[in-house]
Image 1 (cartoon, helix red, strand yellow):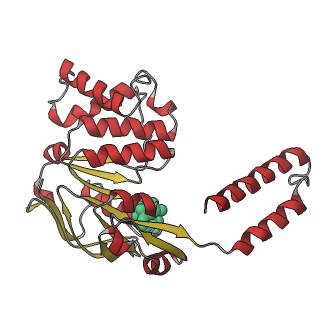
Image 2 (image 1 turned 135 degrees about the horizontal axis):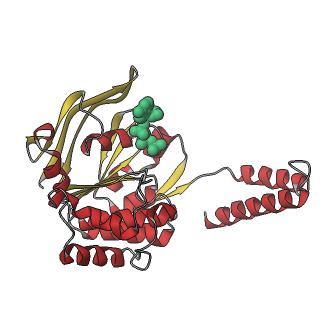
Image 3 (image 1 turned 90 degrees about the horizontal axis):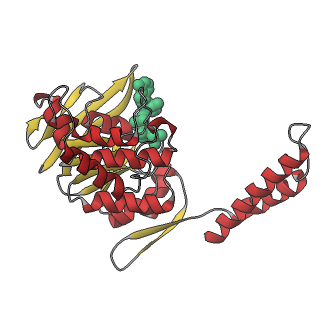
Length: 299
Ligand SMILES: Nc1ncnc2c1ncn2[C@@H]1O[C@H](COP(=O)(O)OP(=O)(O)OP(=O)(O)O)[C@@H](O)[C@H]1O
């Protein structure tokens, strides 16, 4: 696929406008990050691309063909999706989920072939889930589910990949691995991301949404700036740009806020929160305090 072109897309729910006049070109071989505060419209925009949300106003083209003229099966051969909500209604195994990636290529009730099985095996090995292939998908942890869904997307051999918060639930090793795998596919990618440093490290371009409007679009160095973080998120930061033009954000937090937290913790430590469990209350407060200290040191 060469490109997905979005023109003047607008979308309202219950009289509230969620997306306002969005125009955007997503190249077929670039990794575009979609960032912005909670509720700014990232998932709503992505749902238009994978056709969960109907187009109310504006147009979306895939390689110059209006999306509504492309039948769903053809679209599913071109576009794979890793969405945010992954619960399955039936008790599928991890292997079943991976094999579902072949569905757009099959006729109704056509059986899986050895080739399908080999593709599923290769994808599951790639995401470290082959050993868990007989596990019920619904019993997996959030991160394991996400890796299973990535395997399904790989098996689908898409030309374009849509990821809605793909690193949600993943530990740092798998966050990096997932982003490396998808980047290495050489297909177009659009991903809603919250972690600014991951977005900066992996994306070719970043689109910033706020209140359903595109605020900025550009390379990570153009977009991930102190000004963006202040105006879009209301957060103070410092941003360093390395020799590869990749920005790295450090968030500024008032040191006094930590001091106050320690004082509060020491006052409450050992005190009973629920009236009958002073020990467990003390433990949880201490561990929260330790987390804050560790976090502060890492800053
Ligand atoms: N079906 C719906 N009915 C009512 N409101 C909705 C619906 N879908 C989305 N919204 C609202 O639209 C706004 C944008 O939601 P969306 O999920 O696109 O945000 P987001 O940028 O992906 O947020 P987050 O970062 O929290 O995932 C939110 O205020 C949300 O509550």
